[in-house]
Image (cartoon, rainbow, N blue to C red):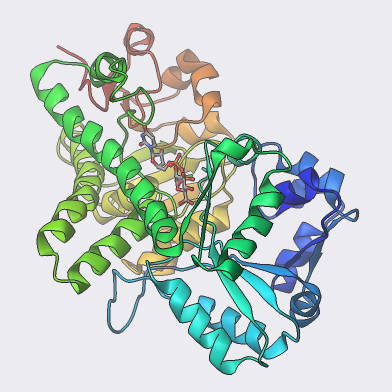
Length: 450
Ligand code: UGA
């Protein structure tokens, strides 16, 4: 919404939320306090806020005034009842639709921006049509393809914008209205219009394919470690095949983020609900491979530390699910930490952007042990060198650029020996680390050769 406001000064954009603290943070004079850390976003908000971009808790008023409403609420995996652990929880979407229906007095276009299971638009339409004040609603699907950490550039220069609408004269008119907004800065040939179901399914499909690439290269990373191949070299070699392409082939300790797992589970649930068990199993394997990769990383650590990490200090560099974001949802670090805490390790975490209360909240959410135990077993440091003092090993969980620039000799000198690095992102230079004296394990190229 910030980008739309910045690119379209003639359009008034109001972002509403029930959460007063969140809205207050979006309105904070100090742009460092924006609730989301995203490179370049502060400048966009500075330019548009107060001009044609507004943040408010007056939800009814904003609905009443709007011609077009984007529903952008979360759709987490259900944690209860039918479809638990797989289906998307559409509770917030439904609440939104009911509120729009109750308040609206003029015809409106309602845009699904949240990622949703296929055919959700028809549920929204049914709620709007049956509970509203006889106003007409057109429902569009406009899935978001930005990635966190690069959101601003992804939005300013998207590969494509996808708009799904009803194939009726009214549906086409609504789609065109949204096309006209994006056309203010996106070349027309990159704006695709489809029917609603294709648009909804394309979003799930894109995330499933992306996650599948990561699981595929992660599966190869283990073969590389066993055979002496180097996964980065394999990625480079296959990525030069233009049919495969070079992006999204970086082996890692496992993908995280709010979307990949949720969207694939969603896809699996949809497939199962149509009785497509082979299709469901195929996609579920992408998730199982990802779980295995996190497990495998932890087991490598335990094995290399003489089969016990009990009472040993282990330093985590990175907690976010990827660099350049403070988002930790489904981050591999959470599972790896939980596994190691089960083995009675002592963990010290340093992440440039993630705050201590978030890290504890992530662990407490798992309910593996008491909150007090998480607090006593895991400490959060605000300085990387302190985090490594007297550590047995360092695990790199997020690929933050700054990790590459540290004084690794100084880090080595202050660690217990043998000092080990478990590089879950193959971020550092093996030779440099080995020359300093580290035992260096990197995902996809194994441990220091004796
Ligand atoms: C992903 C998609 O890339 C976006 O297109 C989509 O809009 C978004 O989900 C969404 O549905 O909201 P995001 O989760 O923000 O974006 O970040 P990604 O860059 O896709 O990374 C996801 C995870 O995969 C991260 O943990 C990342 O470290 C990992 N990854 C990515 C790898 O391990 N290797 C790679 O080569 C690429």
